[in-house]
Length: 165
Figure 1 (tube, rainbow, N blue to C red):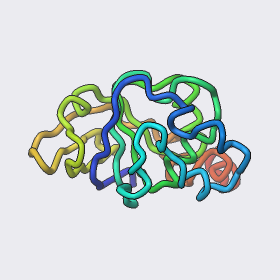
Figure 2: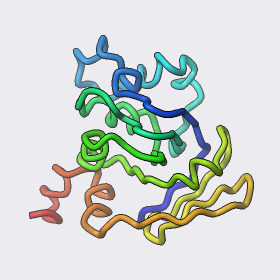
Figure 3: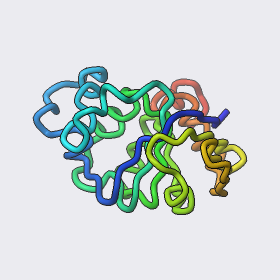
Figure 4: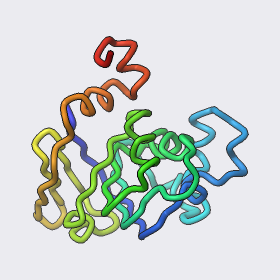
């Protein structure tokens, strides 16, 4: 259920929401429009290189800054299936779960995954595997209720499905 496969796209520490989706694009709620500008201030080529299923890898404090939901929406809609980071800003973490973007903290994986590596993650089992290097990393699986939220595509869909009351 919580299995991901993709190429890694790597960023550093303190990637804030203003870099993930610049404020000048917050006048739209169109998810595809937001995705088309995702990461453009830090990585002009992001929209051309990201493929459906890719996995974003980042350092400490990913998603810091303002509390906008637009940031995880832009990441998810760009095609990123999972974000692995050393740590996440608290509000970004919760917003990601709310909109159904899978995220996981695992410093060892961040250390062991380079840009462009092929990565497989089984978050039911709590294993991240770098298929390029053959190294694997352990992480704590999400509780079942968070897995349901992500699998349903977010909190609202989970409520509508009757999975969350």
